[in-house]
Image (cartoon, rainbow over all chains, first blue to last red; front, side, top):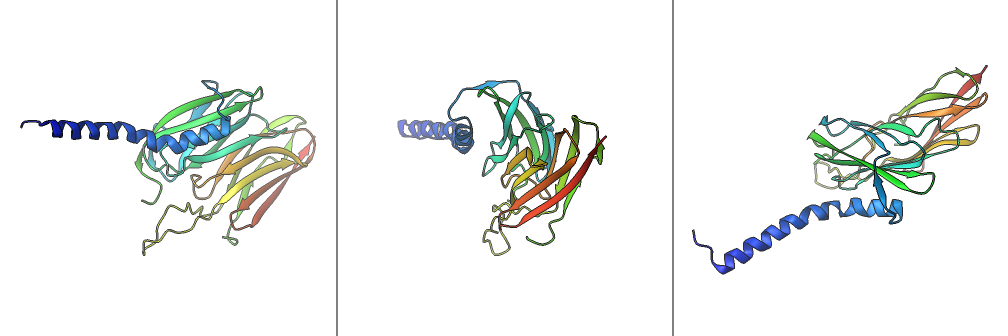
Length: 138
Length: 109
């Protein structure tokens, strides 16, 4: 099979579109992070994100987060139609800055936890969760 | 879903002053995400609980902003510091304006 100049160009355009696409999916998630941090830099580490490696049912995935010295923790599911999951704001009488809950995941994706520390800095943790059956009714 | 939302809370009845206790809460709610479609192909409108708070004698313990990605029958586990005898007040805020409440009394001593 010979490649003409036209074919090559079309292939190239397709390849570019493919590499750009994942960014589109994440754009809403990035926006949510920016809204939470106000554009501040987010450091890796300092946050514990407890999530299963494989979740059979995307409708109820148990998730636990904790971050020492945090005032708020935001949970995001980057691959969901709406990436926001929950934001925990800790009050004066919070015994520790931890929480666990159950969330929905549309498919295999990264779950991100971002903690806002008392000194105004931000830290994050990311964990990939493989989902066998998605939890968005699709 | 104003009716049928039944809050359930597990909190200790007694604690020593300043003790950190674990609290587990669950409320029955279908948490319709607004993503699903019914048989005719039209979208089922979103109907979720969008906020949950826990207070001890009026002081905030935790305030959670919830989005549609929280599972059916939202469950939360967290820790609270108990400085004195008093009431733990749990409040859930529904999209439709309903508010569900539960109160647990904790004795110190």
